[in-house]
Length: 318
Image (cartoon, rainbow, N blue to C red; front, side):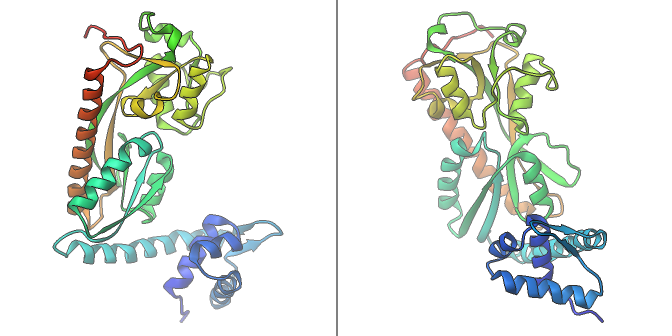
């Protein structure tokens, strides 16, 4: 009988993900020789190779691919045993691994972490910021407990809870503040700056403008909303950003903010987690805290707008 340890399975998983012994060892917090030895011992016990070792990269063999698929199911099941124990306690304590998309993280996270610290003092919050496909994969693999994303994700294995809806606003050079708010048809003909491919917000902006995502564009896409707003301030073009980003991103750029009339472009932000997660009830409680954090932030921003109109903001008839 082959003696396979959970430690070996985790080392194989790390090497499969990183494709490099040094990076895998760093991720596992062990030395490279120790990780290499453990994987070599496992391969000897199995009687076949899991990895094809090259000069610069490590690749899974065909057997290794099948092995890793099964081993990840095992690792995920073991992780869920720990979640089951956490769910049996009176309250959610310990480490909570939250993923969040980049177009939400800088604006919502400070309020959420502060509110969670007050409502769930026993939690140690770990945050992972990346794009939605990666978050879904890491949730599936048991690397995250939950994620805050734009809905829907349409993944049968994921539970979804809507948190709030927010509008998109138009950001344009300050000199254009008095101009009429362009329609989607007019926006299509303007120099519309977008986030790079892979961001769901890019797809949502393109959808509102009726632009084919596959159509070549002669524009430099940005990696962050901050980059887009600064480019607008430099007179390069116009962009759309979510309402929650306005206070942070427009404070240091010579831009004007315009709000669209109905039907306004918008998105729904929600939380997702594995439908099989034993922590479903506790994650529902966390979702309620996040929803309240977002509502508090919305009221603060609305109060600031009422106290003094945004630079160049336009009130459009519903």
